[in-house]
Length: 451
Figure (spheres, rainbow, N blue to C red):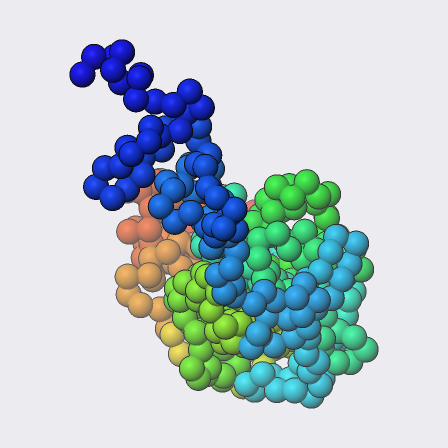
């Protein structure tokens, strides 16, 4: 059919030509709006094709009519999650608060001891004299739970735990990130607490917690608070317990030092996955085990600080002798000779494997004081307990003291002959030759004309 015949079949107004029906359906051409009579004007035209705009509109209406999940009110806590909502200058945050009596025992340690620990003792434990004037009763203990172990921008501290002394009681507050948009109020609360504290106390916080928190302040375009001081108890504990414990994780210290064993504690590797489930809509009760875990960490920090201060305050034969020796070595590094001597004396009296190194350390203390006869006495006592392989080094030290300090070449020569393996052969030969010559001169009889 040519184009002329096709056009002749169309009406001038664009409607279908009279009698033009195919397969029982009416074709629509020309105008997009079909001609309908008044009787059917209000009824939807089910046979009409739906355009793109109508299709999108119908889909949006369907989504709007779909039953949506009930949303949590911004002023209400997450369902099943302990705590309540608080507001500050930056918005709302979720806070879990609890108070502990000063006589609360974390294992074998009472929290009260952490209240009276002095800055002088903690300065020696931390080997940082700047901590000496710090008032530890105003310290802020911090511990975070995070979505990973990286310091990068993708790691979130979704739980910031804080503890401090309020009078004699220990107050614990945990700031929970219900969603990433609430990080600002959490950091604002932390900054306020840091401003009120004399210092912050953490466990491995210098390497992990604080650098991560600094990053979060920067990413949220907030001023980074500067603590007056930072006490990292990981380093203190490692110095005190290094001879006894190879693992100084906080949970290990709880078992070995505080005599505390956690039951049903959530593993650190599980924590990020649990928080992700919470963000996906799981009931807030899933975070409660993490809150308990974090709370234990904070309270143990308070107890551990008190225990470390107690151990350094005075030597006690009731303590493990290996700890006594470690405290003696720490005191030497801190420049406290009296304390070092007291700890070394206690360790040496035990008669165990620590006796020899304790006596050697006592000799070092005596040498620094100029008490050379006492240093020799300590080394000669150590020589009676030492292993044969370590004897030459002690003999060499005794040879030096007798020659240079006590002016006794004959005794120095005796020890030098037993110290051949402790220094190079040439040096040893020269020492023995020199001492032999000096001892011979002193052994010559005094001339009669000078009598």
